[in-house]
Length: 243
Image 1 (tube, rainbow, N blue to C red):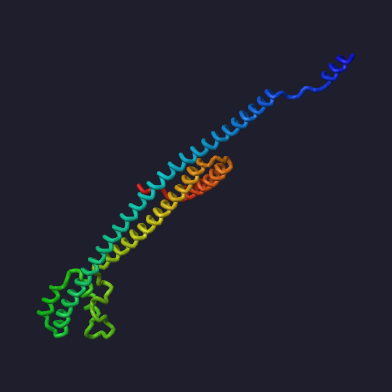
Image 2 (image 1 turned 90 degrees about the vertical axis):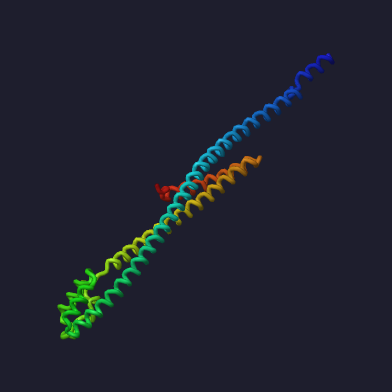
């Protein structure tokens, strides 16, 4: 009777987890946690690899474009310098021609005032062909009798020196080339700044892979992603490299 009551009391006590079962549960939990972290680690690694690939391509394109625009700027500024030199040469030639016209006119004017037809005709034959239309138009105003006549043929609308027009054209060309060079230099600087920003993205992704904490890696990858979007927007707003 006593033995029976003891057996009944043993059977009434609920069975708990054994030591082996507890160890098994702990092992399964660690395995599940490890698989979870491994899955997140693979995901962040894939994202980092994609970011690095995009950054590498954009950095190469940005560096290439910066070099091309820098070369374009140098070429345009060199053309501006050449055009400015040609303008200076044309201006000097125009000044020389204007001086010679003045000397020849003085000889013709002296003979004209002295009514020396022979000397006047000789002086007129020495005039520059391009100067003759202005001189003839000036004579038509009867300068000896007309007080309102221009002082000399250089004041007449017919007086033209081709080198004056050439100098103006070369100066305008030089200004246009200079403006193009400045614009190209500004574009090259923008590409350089974009390359620096892409280097910052590369740094963030690279240093993020060193952190064992997933939260830190996610944070750095997020910042790098935002900067990469900014870079892409800026890149789309820039002109492509010159041909």
